[in-house]
Length: 405
Image (cartoon, rainbow, N blue to C red; front, side, top):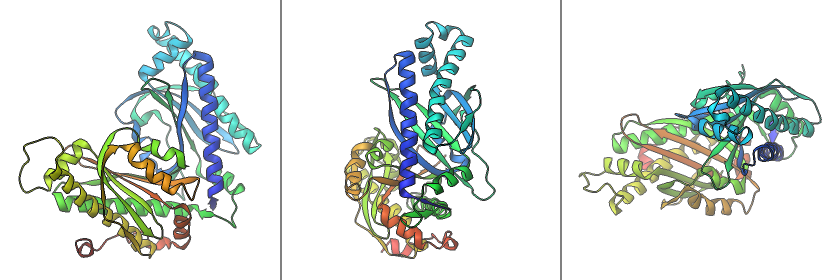
């Protein structure tokens, strides 16, 4: 099955407009001023769905849907936000659990009915949905199980993040369509003679990125002695103007490189400030007196970023059988969106949408987390995938001697 860039963009916009319609319904019912911050399509392993929800208590309103598209969708609030929304609809209901449950369910029913109907209208077909189901769960358990597929190990997830204006509160719409029904719908909108990409090659590329991330994690362990594992790898698709918002407003320390070849683009290795100090000190021969980030810490991060980038990019080159070079790393220390914004602007000179490759690595032994974000040129990535031999997906091992030359 093939899917083209235009249909990915169309379906992403459709999800975004559906989320905006749902958000307008919320505002009309409650007076709460909210806006859709970002919508993206993500391809990832089933077990990684909802990884960003870990450790929090959530309330959800869930639906099954069937017709030209089949699957499940859920509106997700953190527990405190759910009480606020219930009170806005039915004053005092947060003190009465049953009344609060009824209020949130009614809001979810109206919001999500409009969301699903928008898909049906665009696809010029019928999509029926079940009555709403109210759920209270911790972390990713608030989401439905990802659809099973005998042929594919990964799933497409549509996610919209909605924020309250002037409040540091977000809630989410997740849509998990069954793979075959989504692929069929995309196929009907694909220009298979133009910029189409075989879906199995997107999956293979994602698997290759997971291996590349583990190679980078192995390089971290080799340099620092800290056992490190690749955690989450996903391939997302979003309008270019939404890319910086996906990184967020936290402050990061790390490196940025430009890579050239097939594909070209930018790659970021980012640490939160605490992790940057931890991993940098593990590379130093003597213990530092200060817990603050110093010039010595930054030099160590720059060196480590170079090693991680080399392992990651060399893994790509080995599988794609192309030459992928990169510039020396440039140290960055800023808010995530500020780091990404100029890179997205550069890529956006040639394309309206972007594939964003996101990977995380962690260790259980100490406080440490690193992220790798790649922003490739869309046309060159498509060309690389077109030539990709899926049988080479496991061949991501980089030559360590070459890395340390």
